[in-house]
Amino acid sequence: MLSRGLFVTFEGGEASGKSTQVRILEDILTNLGFDVVVTREPGGTVFAEKLRSILLDGNGVTDPLTEFLLFNAARRDHVVNVIEKAVAQQKVVISDRFLDSSLVYQGYLKGISVDLIHEISRLSIGECTPDLTILLDVDPELARSRLKQSFSHHTHYDKADIQSFTLIREGFLKLAALFPDRIVTIPGNTDSCTLSAQIANLVLERIKARDAQSLSTDTLANNKDAV
Picture 1 (cartoon, one colour):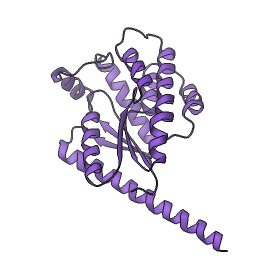
Picture 2: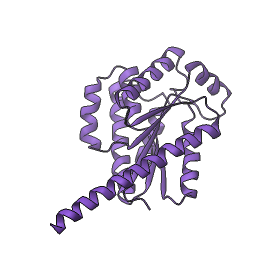
Picture 3: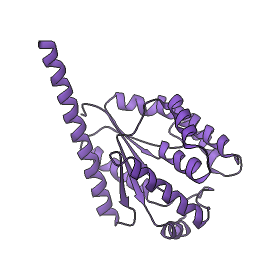
């Protein structure tokens, strides 16, 4: 069991392979004995899943700020009812997307002020920040090619033009440069086995570091009590 819960997020543009790698990581960690909770955004709760159907079908929301506020409402419910509870129970939470996606899609792509996104997010989710974010970086042309070959349900984001795909990629890479300690960028065109092994190693290293930090903190507290 973990000494402290861990919150891991996957980010990237459309058809970057996030969902596949989330499932593989879940299997690896579960087989190693960890208690794992897999979730997604928008979604993760009954309420948030209802908002997901509105947000992703492309027919109901056209105003970027309205869209962001709905994403934020879904995220608030998700954080309070799933993520924070699971982390408090010493579980590994793996989420397919989180706040970084809003910064890129509603901020970088659609022009909402990043300061406004951060301000509203601080009110709604507080200090809930991923311990590790895996960014799967895929060339826009490859992503569009993958989507054409996919039989899964496509959202309006999947149908965006190449310029939008390029802007989304640029946005994520800029975030990765701003938060190098949290966001690890991995080429999404790496073969699946190599990619999943690399991701699992990153997560296990982060777990080891968190446990060591927790042990050090507990030892320091015990020493103070003894004095």
